[in-house]
Image 1: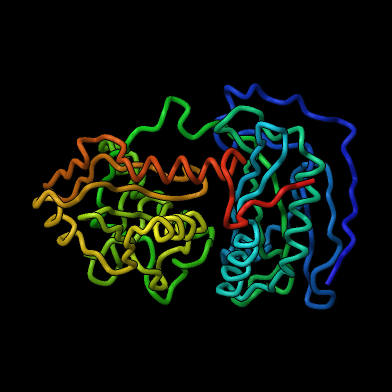
Image 2: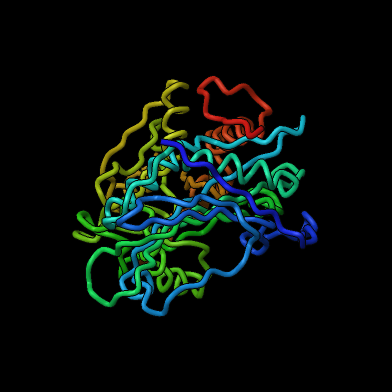
Length: 356
């Protein structure tokens, strides 16, 4: 299926921000992609237009019942001035997986990828030059039908916006301190934890605020049934190196299937390092720690790629990991993934896609 994308260029281009002060998600490019869905027409009218506020009826169902899903990926500028995407087809697949959970209509994945390529090609000048910086890509789909009935909407909008972002580790990579959350839960099997649903993130904010107030950067989520099995860290997947093996929670229906997670597992197995996708309780992790068997811990996600964990606070226990230093395997994973993303090392897996 193919839809011609119309392009309306702005006549008021923005001044680009200094790359040293980008931060994350604070600046937006000159244009955005928009496409509409109705029960009568299906997906239609794909267009690139000047970045501007959206008109939304106060009764739009997204505002009342939360039918909204999103994705996140990046475009990277290489040293030889090419623009690369990292596994964008996986984002297209996950967008549809998330949408299906909320009874939203599927998007043709080739149309989604063509929209990405066309928009980024138009906004190439917004991809920053410095190593570590990138152009963050945020696709969002939400319900637009004005109706207060509790049911799936009959109309939707797909929007893609772009935001130049600074280096995640502007001052150098540092292990983070994590609070193990025992009061709030992120998701439950049968719910929406496996999908990139906007409401999942709203529900996580309270625990994050309380952890920050205690001096911790993030929270480690435990399962919602027994409150003992490790699930995610903040909005990232989590890994632990124990006695030479790498453990990560299995995708059980309440854990988001991260694209970076999948890439890390692929790399580890290629390197001959055993990976165990299994349940892991905090008691088991603490036992490994007391025996001196917990060697490294890190989170994975689009924003940070790989984020080393230096300390876990669980009840009255403080688990200081690898003397709060970056582990050798953690560093190797980060260097390999970012090397592939920035086109600095070979990509034997075909993960990168060049934008012409």
